[in-house]
Length: 139
Image 1 (cartoon, rainbow, N blue to C red):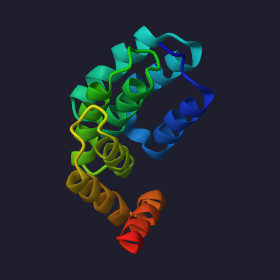
Image 2 (image 1 turned 135 degrees about the horizontal axis):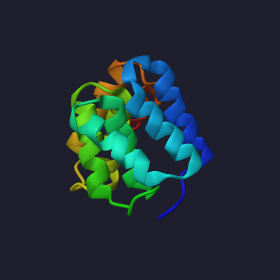
Image 3 (image 1 turned 60 degrees about the vertical axis):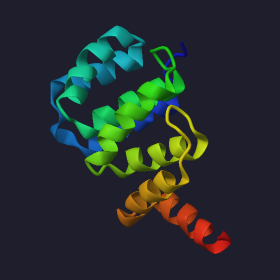
């Protein structure tokens, strides 16, 4: 297992600022992540994710995809990304697209790749818009 990187901590802090209604559980998990207490991160974030919090689901996806504070599992990452993506979270849609393109944790499927690209692009995700444009340009 890898330790949480500073770049990913910034991702989580950004998510917290973008969605201030998280409550104490997310904040406690975020603080625990910054100090390396990953058991507390999971203890606080897993219930939020299971209750349908899309940003927390996305963050658990990141943790599993990168093996940060948990044993790396692309299957588990795809599960969390999918839950978040189905509720419209563009970052999760984009990451799920990547997993379908690479066949990480899911069966490689370019139809699914395009589907999640379009959804993320429609929400203004610049990376998805750029990559989707390149796909159309290149055929």
